Length: 254
Image 1 (tube, helix red, strand yellow):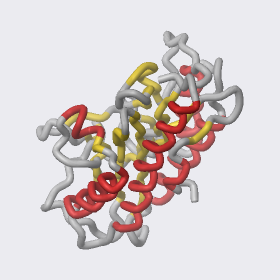
Image 2 (tube, one colour; image 1 turned 180 degrees about the vertical axis):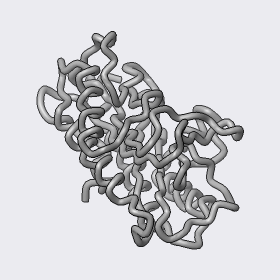
Image 3 (tube, rainbow, N blue to C red; image 1 turned 90 degrees about the horizontal axis):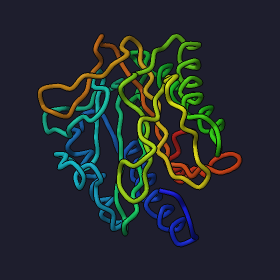
Image 4 (cartoon, one colour; image 1 turned 60 degrees about the horizontal axis):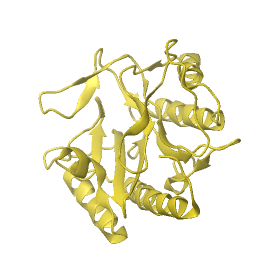
């Protein structure tokens, strides 16, 4: 969507607060020995407290309230009573929701407990790339140039990007135009970011794979060549300068 008045900006800020605070609290609540279903139920209670509704459930009938992916699961992981979190796990939580007709989205990967499997370097790279990316976006900038920046920064750190996942417009629904805000340069994409538009910018930084493939459960995605992936995401409003980060209170850069 494009922000056209203060009421719309207030509506987006409220939706963003709901998802950002929920994501931050879920990260802090996660503990070894807990199932991803228990973590999801906690997130659901937080969203409900804001009066917000799970976006993937509303939009796609997703069997959970947040997507929770663990270790080799890249994204869209289904909360489960059989997936028990362990010390050192690489965990990704993606929280998106609707509140009073406005939609917001954010996500974060983190190492649970001690970094016994050395995932923290990947997590830090994803965070750094998201920060540099967002600071480079303003009205008029070519979308493909931002994708090129993301892939270049990943390669500098010894990582790859997932080429069939990307950010997207958001606001009045979960996925809007511009879609396919990819982590690499599509030379045929001549689109530019537009001032006052709302987008969800997200990284997909991987150790081994360049494409994500769907498992038989119809949701969970893993790498075509295995390995691990870190994702971080903010919902932003594009300006003439540094974007307004609506989900900044999720604390992923703290």
